Image (tube, rainbow, N blue to C red; front, side, top):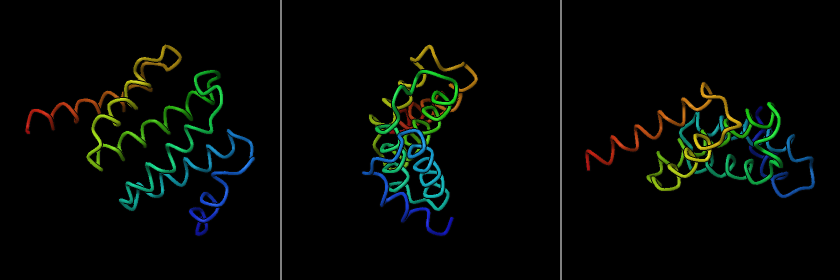
Length: 120
């Protein structure tokens, strides 16, 4: 875990199998988010999304895609990139492959986005 960011940085442009790399990038995104490094969290999550092939096919890929999109949306929201956060949430919510229970986090983020718009 101590070298997670270094490994993720070294491998994000590699030929390592996509789902394995996406899982590693998810771990890095979660760790970055956990220490409020939202720019890094977004970077790792968005790169994980880019690397994930057939992200909306198969239960494991769908779960991984939802987690990556959710963390990226939360990070983008924290960075003030509201349009990007909304697009990431809509990718989850609008996808019929995602079970409704897994759409809850995306709905929560969208509600926060709407709440912030009302306050402005």
